[in-house]
Length: 238
Image 1 (cartoon, rainbow, N blue to C red):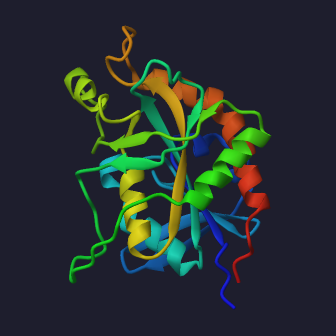
Image 2 (image 1 turned 180 degrees about the horizontal axis):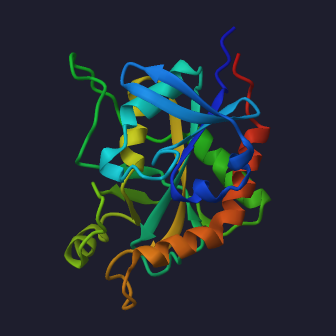
């Protein structure tokens, strides 16, 4: 009987500070959309979406290859991690948010040669797992919110943030494309967002890349613990 609980992990900035990845062997898999490199953590594949050297900006990520690689590896449930900017003053940097919906007008699709209309959405089961893990680790988090995806690689203008803050809670450059692609090929997907900064213009303090990277490092210990908890519930891939 096919196991429907095989887990994969994908992430960006915060996963580069895990530490234990330096000791793991790098593996690769060829997909119809390109080669994908990944780590295998106790039979759980982990993909760094920005590349092994963190040199692939958001608009150059091979989203289709990354998501299809999980399918080829037998993964059914994708646990994602995303660094985001907060659009609400009450959602302070340093906490987590588990989106229950998203907005993305720059859609990417596997369905280029046929008509297939999926209903976008994030996995309730995986979201509940993230909620449970955050509760067990006594972490501060919001259990729902709206993710707005921009294209990148630049940060958003103050005017753009002033517009989208009325419709979303956090802003990022990667998650929504992954979620849609996963849904198209029958994979469950949800994400845990780390609020690494306030979006441009939400507060008076200027936004810089250095600020974002410093906050990523501060939240690293929490992310590491969450990844370790996910690995514990993973099912081996045969």
